[in-house]
Length: 72
Figure 1 (cartoon, rainbow, N blue to C red):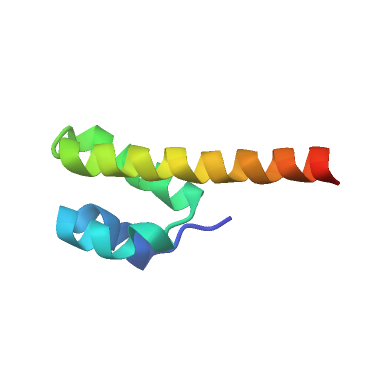
Figure 2: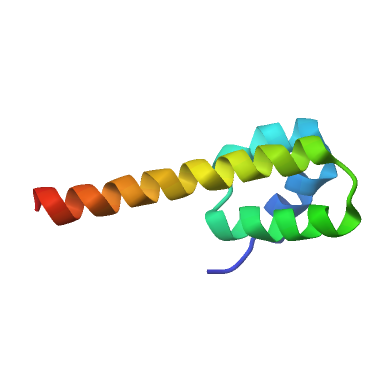
């Protein structure tokens, strides 16, 4: 999947702009934003928010996979 540059720029611009787009980001975009932020070693609040969202997306994905597998 491709990373949407505008969304990535918004996610790493500031914590305020991250909050406006975080629910629109794909898992791949979140990981890309995490890579950028972790290289700069600047804003722990942005890194922590991105980690939380990535974790939640993986939780949702795993839940869907398990339901499909065991509920048919």
